[in-house]
Amino acid sequence: MTPPGTPAEYFDGMYAGAEDPWGFATRWYDQRKHDVTVACLPRRRYRSAFEPGCSTGMLTRRLAQRCDRLLAVDIAAAPVASARERLADQPHVRVERMRVPDEWPAVPDDRFDLVVLSELGYYFDDAGLDRLVARTVDSLAPGGTLVAVHWRPAVAEHARGGDDVHRLLGGVAGLARTARHEEADFLLDVFLRVPPPARSVAQTDGLW
Image (tube, rainbow, N blue to C red; front, side):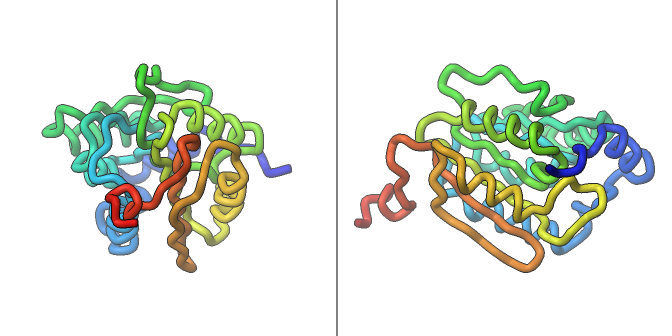
């Protein structure tokens, strides 16, 4: 049994003390990680994407270049305001305040073909993470992409480690892992929603 999930008040407090409390806009580590995340997307373009836990929108800005429609949400009001300002020139991006997984967006009829769980899963207790994963998988279109990327070192405010989140995702029925990027600092996994059978980027391009 994991500790209780991180309360919403924690995030309000973090953003009350600083506009960018984790330094997403200034740290090379985060800039590089965001670039790696987008580089690992197996499709050139996505029709409809969802990014829960978008924070101030630094990764959202990069994802927007690969998506026709993108919904980004966060639990706290301050980062939602920052993300809206950052994405104001991107009319195909919508930023909302939402407490996932208890709240969840209306899923398009054709479902999302991309969901990005970036630095999110370790904030939830067992029941919360199970629900987050279930709602994510249910929201993915057949063949859709799930990208998960999480910090690995222990953090007192996290209910679990990033490795634990990825172990759980690796055992979920309906997901097939097609890529993994592993460093001492973070794990990144790419999953496809099956069926249909998962195919590599080269297979999709007809190279074999």
